[in-house]
Amino acid sequence: MNVKEIREKTAAELNETLDSLKKELFRLRFQNAINQLENPMRISAVKKDIAKVKTVLREREIQETSANS
Image 1: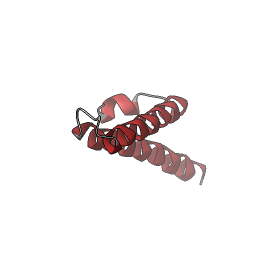
Image 2 (image 1 turned 135 degrees about the horizontal axis):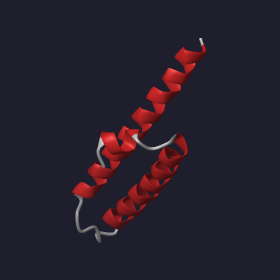
Image 3 (image 1 turned 30 degrees about the horizontal axis):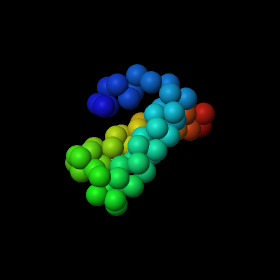
Image 4 (image 1 turned 45 degrees about the vertical axis):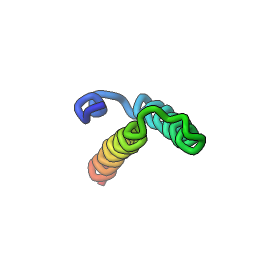
């Protein structure tokens, strides 16, 4: 998932994406703990996607705050 795709989504869609990414990360960590994870690099990729989504949400929050002031 690249930043351009993330920026095109609405805040509600971003929150849904964030929830699904967090659930996926939980599943991956669980699979890793019981040694059934096929691709361990997927964990870091999901973490980075979560960070990207949170960054865009925070940028929008800051823009709204500065627009209201």
